[in-house]
Length: 569
Image 1 (spheres, helix red, strand yellow):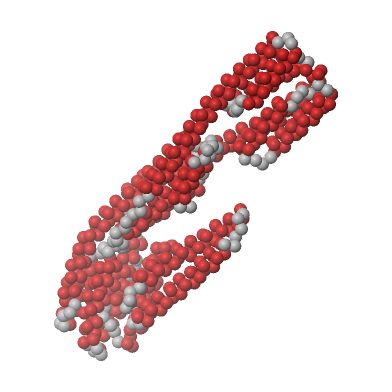
Image 2 (cartoon, rainbow, N blue to C red; image 1 turned 90 degrees about the vertical axis):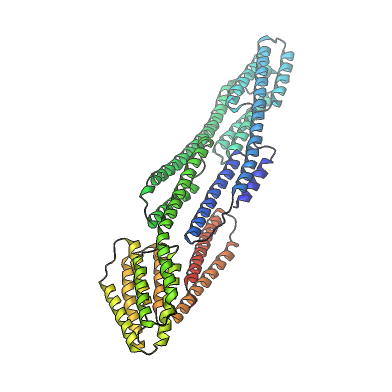
């Protein structure tokens, strides 16, 4: 649900006349709004960091106006509801005083009025007034009602009004009260909302008081059955509220546990020294945020405090990650400066026709390039493309000039054989990131070597690719990292192939076919969503289908990203 929809919901809720029964609904809307806001802000943080890593500017979405609009509407609801609660409390206090006054009057009638007619008229006046008085505080209702019932019992028996009633009235009253007791027992086991249960109980209690007397010899037994049924319902009501308190407490405890986990992980930030460390820990924090969203609300007193604690820890984590990225970027700038200088040197001699000396100079520059180290994911690819373009410009021109000359082909073949042999003897370092950099450097060095004879070029390429594939597999990469690295390695390998144009075009076509297949799958799923009926089972199916749609869309985005990496050569 969109944030604006939640704002509209809380605004509409605040316009209701009676807000007393909508407190939980408003809290759920607020919880939903805050959870969605956390998720959206987290996504903005991720997008901003991704943009920074890619060297791009990113304009963040400002959710402050929506947040202010929501809490303005929510504050209006809280204020109105509080005013209604205060008014209700005032009215209930007034009603309580009125009923206590009536009880005092009834006691006076019982103790002092000797004329039956006057006493009965006084009772009628008191009882009519009693019925018109509204609700009183719930914690005193049972005691007040019991006292009033007790006095009515004394009144009716004292003035012996039962003697003036006919036998069939007694039987009728007895039947009515037995029916009412049966209704109370049925109400005890009924599946009702808590508010409806309490309302029906109060209505039945009022109805009980409206029913006239029963034979004296049966009254005690019937009264005992009545109060037994009433107490059973009150026990059920109390059990419900106690269960709710336990659920709210469990939710707070679960959220506090997540806060503790996050505190522990945040305390280890100083030990995160590589991008891989930060990627792993970011995944952990995102997992905690996902768990947080699955936990229900807690009591109002603790819920806001634990939410603020969790959010501040998340903010602190991502701020630390941002600082780390800045530090790494600063360190990479030195390498960037060195490689830019090498690019300028390569570009300055790329058009030279002094084939031998220029080739030697470029090879020295290539060696210096390798010795300079990596400039980081954000800069390395672009710098390498520029450097390789300058080198390729020269070597392509030299190849054209010396087309058919076996001497240079033999030299290149010897260099590639030497590189392949070195690669066969090479043992990867234990650090995966360092190993990936080294393999990339081998690939770059192989690509930079000039062409060989047509007879030897495919065999040479296959030998190099076979050994590189073995080394990449030995890294045992996993997940998105594996997919990204293998695809980048595949591209580098294709670029080194003698049939690179044909192979790159085939790779593009294969990716586009995968995208088309996934899009058809999404269309089928979306069409199927319209056929699900509104039911608990159908909702689960709908959620499962939506998850499949989201997964397919994520795959499409990944394939499109790969498509952008393939050069138009």
